Length: 28
Image 1 (cartoon, helix red, strand yellow):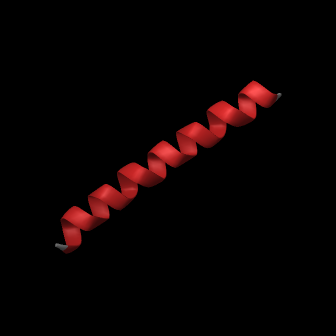
Image 2: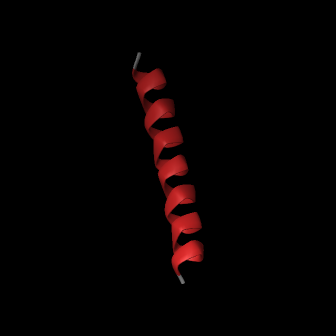
């Protein structure tokens, strides 16, 4: 269960980072 939560949070952080990078490219 712990490993699942860690992998899930890591994937979520990665997706959020990609999203912010895309948004910053669109805005600026």
